Amino acid sequence: MTRVELRKADRRDPVAAARHWLDEHGRAALATVVSTWGSAPVPVGGQLAVAPGERFEGSVSGGCVETDVIAEAADVMAGGGPKLLAFGVADETAWRAGLPCGGTVRVLVEGLERGRDAGFLDAILAARAERRSLAVVTNVATGARSLLEEGASLPSEAASCVASGKSLLIETPEGGEFVHAIVPPIRVVIAGATHIGQVLAGLAETIGYEVVVVDPRAAFATEERFAGTPTVAAWPEMSLPVLGLDARTAVVALTHAAHIDDEALATALRSPCLYIGALGSKRTKEKRAERLKQAGFSDQDLARIHAPVGLPIGAQGPAEIAVAILAEIIKVARGGA
Image (cartoon, rainbow, N blue to C red; front, side, top):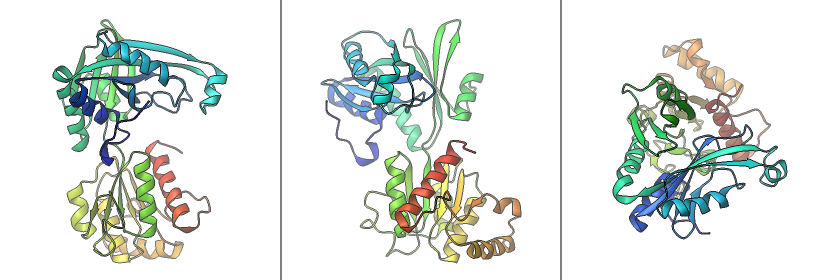
């Protein structure tokens, strides 16, 4: 089996892959996890795109059932209707796939055709690019779907899913409906094009987060040092509001230059961003707190700043510190205690 070659920004994105394949082949299939066992590595809403010739992108189980799903996708692309597949995964199979225990997983496989479905995928990709949330409600028996914009008059179930970012299979008088919450990916804004920032950018992109690096020092924020990662050579006070710090954005201040870090932190504190972190020792934190209080921020505001940044795992050196920072962002994003 082979994987499609896409632009770096689209790699590992099943929706982008499916849209690409519609242009290339005129048809594709999209498999979506609609319910799963508790220990599954792929959450509800996870997707696998399949093209003719057994090309695929994404995952629905981490390896347990992909082969069967791809085979069923070929039948769906050949003209069959949507299929709701149920798999029982034995403990031994789950263990081989890296799972602690077995269980069940249900996967909805839908056929896609260029003339009928290209606009649907384009709408999802456009919302993603503009960091807008959507709910896609699909009847798992008929395949009939509706795409609902956040802020519209959403049904209560769809509104709840969009607000939480969690998808849900519900039973209705019309049959089972899958409410797929499509929310913007976590975005990490790194204020400081430092060595730690270089490693953190690569790690965050690897797990599917969006990354932007901001640093007014043009010699630091260069394409050569951050190949493929968007960089902005401007002061945080000017650049961060333009980027837009929403509730799925993390801001990490890494410059060790007080005037730059303070600008980034002050801008982040005025936003609803998900996470705020700052590098520095305990003494640096104390001095920073004094400056930010003089700028009008309260103790409650300052409590939002994770400092010293990163989980306390004894990290040493830029690479380990970057791992600790990313782990803390993931913890906060997932609601960990």
